[in-house]
Image (tube, rainbow, N blue to C red):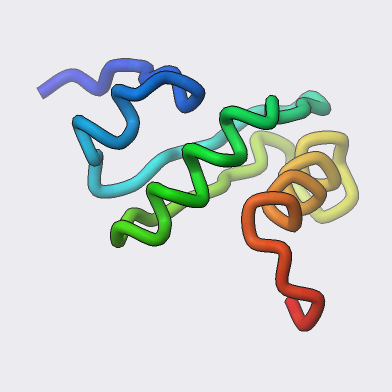
Length: 79
């Protein structure tokens, strides 16, 4: 089976319900409000998110962006 990209802002995320959503990269990124909403619904339905920084170490642009955007998806002040 070949992995296929899935637009997290589309209804496909919730209809296809992949076992996990995989984020990887080395650049800064920002999720749209719709993508945040879809990811919240996806997690509440039992999905999982896996993030993999393509650059070694904490503090890269991707690492900072991923942590920032996940705080939007999971707005828990304790995390």
